[in-house]
Amino acid sequence: MVRRLQLLPQYPLSYTFSFVSGTLTITSGGPAPDYSLTATPQSITVEQGQIAQATITLSPVNYYQGLVKLSCGSLPANVTCTFSPATLTADGTNTPVTGTLTINTNTAAPVVGQVQPMKSTQVMPANFFYLPAALAGLLLAFRRRQITKYLKPHQWLVLLVLLAGAAGLTACGGGSTASSSSTLAAPGSSVITLTAADSGDGPSHIINIGIKVQ
Image: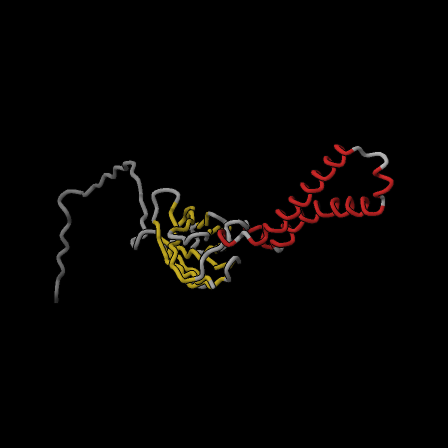
């Protein structure tokens, strides 16, 4: 027969708990929030004097949240760039955000003015001055005898000066259509830089985009 011996503590045990205030901080445990930047297409081909566009995509990493401003650098002569929108907003849900990059190869034509041909707007001043001059010439041709009765020699001189001025303005208006070569980007290939910078102290990135003007 086996007997079990149970030992009882000589003194009873007691515990006391004390609660103090503290701060609980939860970290991701992974890399810091960041983002990547891509352009589609990465190489843009555009006709001289025209515009071309690319889609810019910001892809958040590790729940990045912030405002990212876009800008261009290393632009060739007579080439400008605009962004719509100019700032991309990441909301912290890892959802990609897109914008549009517009490349313009004619500094004399704003991007909003590309919808209408440039020549039509430049011909308007010529037509404006040509029509009155033509009408005045026809009037003089058909009513020369009647006008000579009322106009004195010095009045004839004033009329001729006015007609000459109208003809000169007509010539200037018509010639302006051929003076746009200095505002066009030269044909060739180049590489521009696209910079994305966090509005605060967050990360910034730079990507290269090829531009070919033909």
